[in-house]
Length: 159
Image (tube, rainbow, N blue to C red; front, side, top):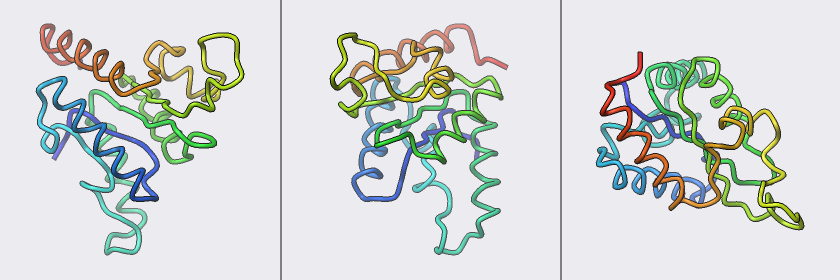
C-alpha cells in the first residue's frame, strides 16, 4: 500500500528506531495524518534482513515506497549520515520528491561561529533544498512539515 510520507534513517539500534517512531508520531500529530496509514517506516512496515524477506525484496519495496511517496523525511544524525539514508534521499531527489532533513546531532554545530551547520555533507545539504528544509530539532521540523502539508492539501496533490 502506498504511503504519503517515507521516513528514512538508520535503524540499527532500539534508540534509532524509537526516535524514528517519535518523528512519525510528531509529524502525524502536527499534520493530522495517520501515523500508520500515511507514513512508511522501513523497520515497521517493510522487511528486515534475516527475518524472512530477501535482500532484493526489501530493496525493491523501499524503492517502490519512495516512488509512491510525496514527501521523504530523513534522520541525519550520527558521525556521518547513514549510507542507506543517503541513497534514499538521493533517489527521492532524483524523483522530484519534497525532502525534509532532521539533524539534531550537536556535532553539526559544534565549534562554529555561524548558525549554519557544517554537516551533513554538501550533497545531503543540497537535497534538503540547500539547507532550507534541514532542521535542527523535531519541533521546527514538525512546524515546517505541517505548513507544507497544508499548502499541498489546499492545492491538491502534486503529480
